[in-house]
Length: 65
Image 1: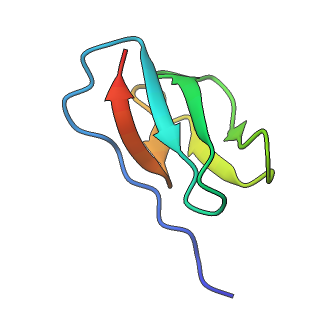
Image 2: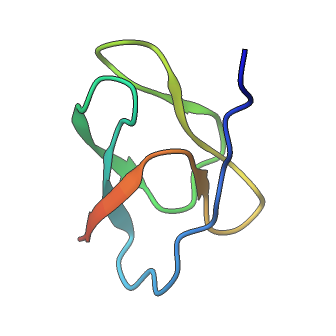
């Protein structure tokens, strides 16, 4: 089983981000500084985790809102 790589998005200008799940392709709006782990509403995969600042995501950031 491969390990999921989480990265911090660059140039976060808004408070919310549209993130695309890498497993199922679902696009979800997520708070840019979450206090808990964010999972995909469709497949349940972890798409974002808190870091004490800007989130780390395993998906693709589509848009900053």
